[in-house]
Amino acid sequence: MDSGLILLIFLAFLFAWGLNRVRRAFRLGPVAYAGVMVVFVIAMLAVWGQSFR
Image (cartoon, rainbow, N blue to C red; front, side):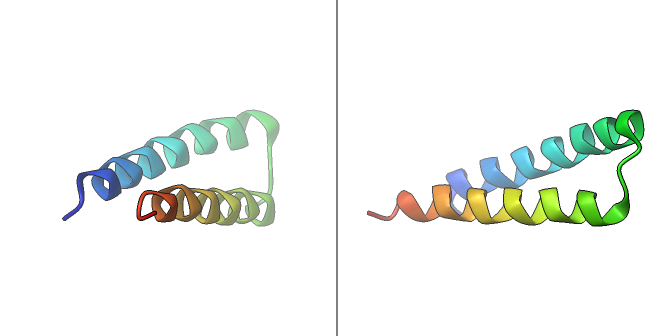
């Protein structure tokens, strides 16, 4: 497995944990939480895809 992909998975878990704490503080709904996670996943896939060039 690519080490960059492992790092991105770790960052995704860290981001989800932090976002969950922020969501509780700002009382965001599940739709906002899902929207932020989708944008994060797309951004991380784009960063990972750039490493193949």
